[in-house]
Length: 68
Image: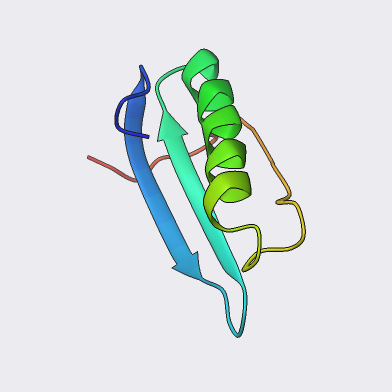
């Protein structure tokens, strides 16, 4: 992710037994869309046996931020 233009942050969340959620933050939509393609390739190339179901992708704009 760090090599993709507009990268701001990446979080991996333990969502319970056998489940993870990731949140990627980019400064623009183009970077976010590129990260989706890169992430799908990474999962396909490296985690196919561990994550047999395709990920669900949700995109949206930041509606609220709590940073000073």
